[in-house]
Image (cartoon, rainbow, N blue to C red; front, side, top):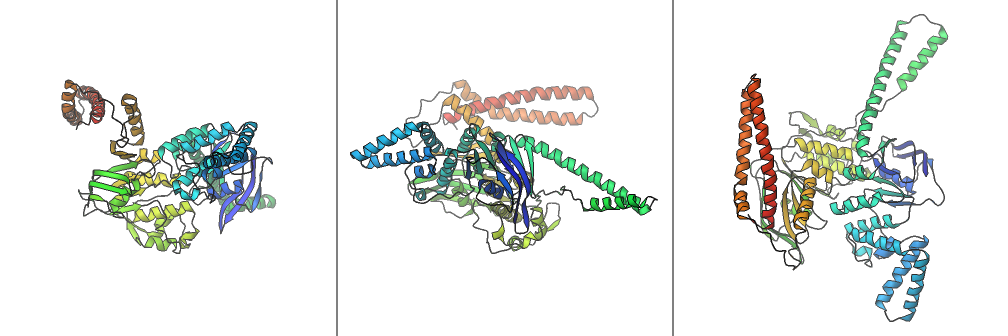
Length: 626
């Protein structure tokens, strides 16, 4: 068990931790949430012993082990993957590290008897420490995280691979408390699914910060909320937290209202000056003074954004025959796509498969090797990129935002100043004159998002918008996109965000053409699962394997496939006509009931037709029937 008592920590004139106390018990699964800049990462670092508080204590047993994964982990240069993950002086780690070193040496000198003898000695030590199972588990974790070259130097790996090694290192080390700061950032959906399942069986306590609300909901059994220096604890997962937080805030508002009414009555009593003994009157005056000084934490800190966008014409973006390669690796091959007004398009796929490359081609940052891009004359693109390269640390917040606009106009015609917009994004008037370099990583992303949205685009390109944004800001972004009249194209690994925002997707898959799917991410996963059950996985086009023998479509199925879309359109028209008749029937309840019953029958037929269309379209795709 770990206990935290009266932790106090400031940053400049900002109180991050205000006499915080809590407890972490064995097998706790704690999700730490709060608006960016409130001190979540600082709190984790203080618990992990990487940072210190100005006041307060953290108590635990002497042999209590804490393992910490930072948002941007630093690995030790010069070490290979195995040496990196088997770090530390724990006996089992030392034995596994030495065993792997001898094993590698034997590969280079297989005939060397001294090396063979040392290998036998290390094998015996592996037996003594019962390390074989841990060694196998470690390599399984690395493989699941996509790391297969165990003896490669860490400096030779990409940023994404280094993050995965850091995750493996944190998972493999024996610990009583595992602290993970944004573990799902830059991981693809498949890896996030695996990590979610792996943490379910983790033996120690777990404390994590993540923007992934599905992940947070499924992994946690407690929520710690850090808000303006105070810590609020809730039993249950993220879904229960949302309910209980609403209850807490409603209770606080009722206390404030009761306090206000009592104070008003007390002041009225004193003002009227009724006769009373001097001591009693003095006590009443003192109580009123105390009540005047009392404060309540009910001020809303909701991020809000209401801005119009410039008019978008009928022609948006057309891609024809786009191809792009890096060296011998082809990321995009002969890709055609038409973006139309109102599109809500999600782009998913493994890291390095070409998703960001496609966005950069659309905005003109990269030229395709082949193909043409046409952008409509009325298109105004807002591009939210992954990196912070567009933020100048030497600028003040207000200067950075004013570069875009001094004022913006909402869709209702209201005028909002840059200062007001910064306030709506939780940057106070005083903070607006701070330099960007003083912001936390999450605050930088929130500021950057505000700048992109303030340009009043009509086509929004979002590259991993959920990385480093807090759940509250994500919720506001989702609400903004709901009312945004333009086109949204987003690359994301966040399943909740995709389900909330997009209605069709481009799916990048290794060695396969880009697939187009109508539906959100959860619907895509369900469809893919059913397709694999029915037809098995599709063979890779570059694998050289012969495709499985195709199932033939019968004559009746072909005829049905050719006419089913017309049938669906006809049924939809019939429903529209019936709805008009119902609206025109007025107070004739008998007629309304009759028409409504007919409408329900046709809707059932339409649903059956749509299910049949889905079956036939899946079969047609397998057979490559257009």
